[in-house]
Length: 313
Image 1 (cartoon, one colour):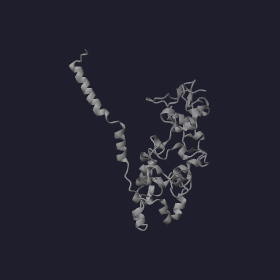
Image 2 (spheres, rainbow, N blue to C red):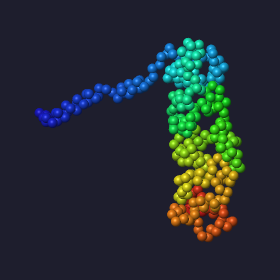
Image 3 (cartoon, rainbow, N blue to C red):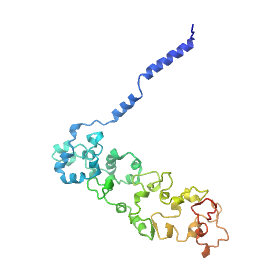
Image 4 (tube, one colour):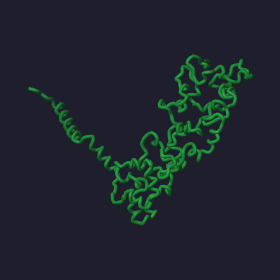
């Protein structure tokens, strides 16, 4: 005959009660309940559809029909609040009933910049490109989405831009226009490189909203991959300060976009012997005569080397 101790029986009973109490509810039930609570309740009677808007705003509607917003029907799966004109302007029933009363419809052009961007982020908040917009310099400086994008009359069909790059960026960043006219520059004005190739205009975690490569290295390595390494002997500024320690990225009067006209003057900004200098000082036999003024004539692998700790070839 099988004998069960009192402690074993009590343990079995408690375990069965816990299982019976917790196991009756599947994990999916509270998840779906939470989703249903967060889903906004839409009164369908408040929405009239884009065709009604067309009756009064025929010209605007004609332009809107050609845009990606109309062609994709915005987000038709999420209901009328995310479709057509009313996705951006809000429900239009009161506006129509009031004979076109402008106070009964949302006009993004009259909203505060951050309110405009919040409406756009209602659909565009997902993905890598827009997920950091709230921390972006554009948002922090009250530059809204419609400052660069035109939902109705874009000059560039792609991304609904108000103008093409770099002209659009120059509208605010006027100090950068002169850099791209210097003798040595990235070919932005020639349309070979775009501002957004290097910067994420919608925000990011890096300085100046710079993008990064897939390996999270400096975006410069996207094109200049031969400088990326890894190298056995690394030039420390490449990893610590980045390319801008020696180069001006937009344009320069000096070859190779260097900050200084003489290479040795640039190198001496770090390689000068001081009491607490963390880098080697300049050797005594480098007398800075003409033949020593271009350090990279000898130190050819200045970005990094697999054979020499002083970056000889």
